[in-house]
Length: 447
Image (cartoon, rainbow, N blue to C red):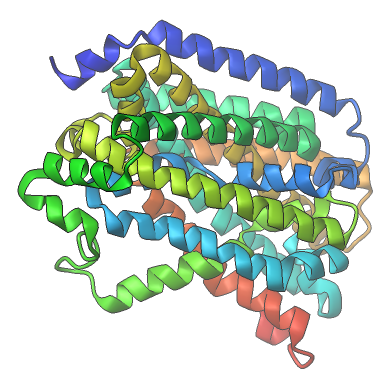
């Protein structure tokens, strides 16, 4: 039986029903939240009404993207040890955010990264540069999520034509725009909280199931993955399976590590989360909660990745319509049949929706607050007109993301996210740290 036929036998109707249910519930939550979205502070920062733990769960929701769930599980299944390095980098990065950025950012800014940078420099050029960088990072990240959506649905519904996958990417884009336009930051945050809970519970259930099949013995699971891979099996347990090959050097590997570790604290959609809490202390608490949840989740991806390698096999994963990104859904199908596949796929889809909504509101807020209100209108824009521009920008960004997602369909999404991290690590983080800690840092240096 071919893979497409096997996945078609997984009941597309069930998959769509579960996903539709999630969309209906979250849109209801977003509508409820939108009733209190009246001011610019409500739209951009959710009225600063979330507690540290709530915001921590939302940060985890924002951060645990399709790359974390689909990309990393796939990379571990196919490449083993080298795939897990993404997890390590993504997690260690939070220490930089906790120790250097979270509290100070909450104290100095209002809504965007540009607020912090323009605090003691020339407003207009610095804000324009910050908005440009925010847009670049958000665009790469959005591409990854949209490409993930296309691959995932190809797997679920047996849609192998690029046109069919393109239609799915358009639908994801429309739902994402609805979340942002209706609910603003408050609605988006509640979607993140719901999604983070679903994702962590789903990953926990699958992790326990996989370990249970190997008598809760991790060594037996790793041996299973090695045996399934045949001659190439031993390479899964040591470094060099992905990055030691021709064409990559130790410098490439080091540069990827630095980008992952330093990129997180410069991601605009993560930075914007620190403004949704009332105090700097709550900002710090939210990062501690996020570290705990994200750390546990990445331990799950280790088991899920090697589990997919052992039970599904790297060849079958690579041959699937979604390529490497199909490892977690195929593992779900192997473990619990159509029902578990439907649930896990709906969770992965929810992950994509929630993250793209968070990215869209960040990019639209940056354009409206930094470029429109402070560069074009020179600080004289009314809050109502600013929010209106943010909503129009969200529509434009949504359209660009849909187009980009269609073009990027089929790329490895962990790689696309690494591009976003590279920009955040090399442009955003140094500028933020210098403006917070270096008295002689000036506008020219920032630009």
